[in-house]
Image (cartoon, rainbow, N blue to C red):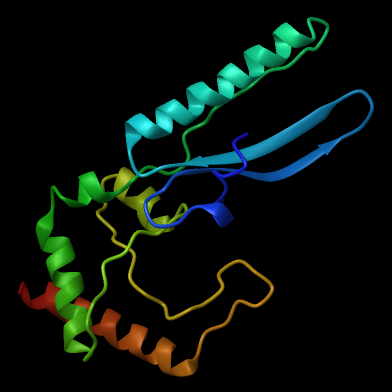
Length: 163
């Protein structure tokens, strides 16, 4: 895999290959990885690249039995959210009513919001105030949690009154 296309070597809207785990012995090896990108076309290209690597390995070692299965996990929610602009407008309004300025930035991983949006329930990701997600130093302040809670309450009110 391209060593410069891993999560730690990319940022913003750059896609990546992310091996998540592997297990094996002398007879069998399984490697799981995540392919991420912000464009469906570039995501498909990542899949083709991976399949090309498999074909290359088969050619180099014909006795090798290797398979590659690509399953859809999370898609970019932006095109779907664009179809329902009121959802983002209310989210941004709820953040403003909390007394904060919103920053619209990409989330570089799969989220529940992406899954729900793909299933037909537009669900943009709101902030939680957390830092260092999924790492040993993940943390969040109680102040940030309180602001996130206020934002959610504002959002509920905006939807309830139809603003």
